[in-house]
Image 1 (cartoon, protein in one colour):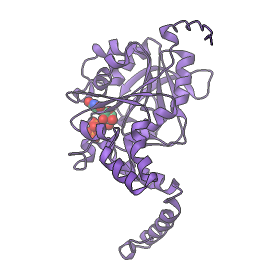
Image 2 (cartoon, rainbow, N blue to C red):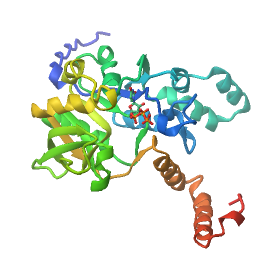
Image 3 (tube, protein in one colour):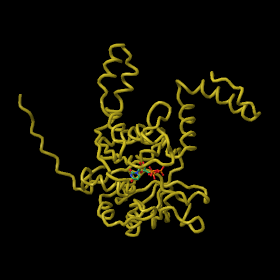
Image 4 (cartoon, rainbow, N blue to C red):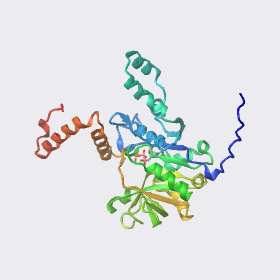
Length: 318
Ligand code: UTP
């Protein structure tokens, strides 16, 4: 049998390559969540029954990103082990015929090709992203913060990848927040485009003064970045808090006119913040078919009791 000759596809020009790689920074100190984060990275805190960072990697995989680089810090082991095989555990579950739990244990390692690199010192998010330079090379890439969850039903990242295809350059995710909260975020000055959910970013400032923010658009933890960001980060000096800020590098690119924003009004949770973490767990637990109905019934009773000042008497059982 002769095999028909198929000419090799011409190599795509660098600018036309689709985004394939995701970078997940998870090397921060997590001081807002101490003491839980003393020996465990905040990205590994459980949200119902999966660590927060697994939701993030699932989101990247769902958007077609099959190569994930974790930027880890002093708790490297926990994250590495979670996305690796666990032979003894798998053997024990297989021997019991517990296929459901066996799959749950195997799933994290099957999501994508997972790589790890260490950020020697937590010198800031910009520095963490710069640590990915050698792995990413000259391709555009996504950055997903490991403690920032976008609800699994949302399609924000896919939309950002489409916007990158259309406009080139870099794309940030923006959410409108109440004016009194904008000083807690990176904030974007924007101009409208012809598309409802897409803006051109004309400037960015990390944690603006509450008196004079450029807008109420907060930058949230999803980015699709042009590799040009690496050269910019190389020369970005430490900024707010003495850290090398990704926002400062993006400000330089924004001034050059190459940054767009996707305005997102869906569900997003900052699991690095205690109150938001609790809201995330409750919300996602209520949405789970195996847990939700019973948990929600208990929650209703709990809230009713709390409102009448009787929480102390409510039992633990549903
Ligand atoms: P945060 O500012 O939320 O992380 O960074 P943090 O510094 O750990 O938090 P607190 O304020 O002390 O509680 C956003 C993301 O960037 C990562 C964090 O792990 C988090 O996912 N990060 C931050 C790094 O990977 N390296 C850094 O140097 C800083």
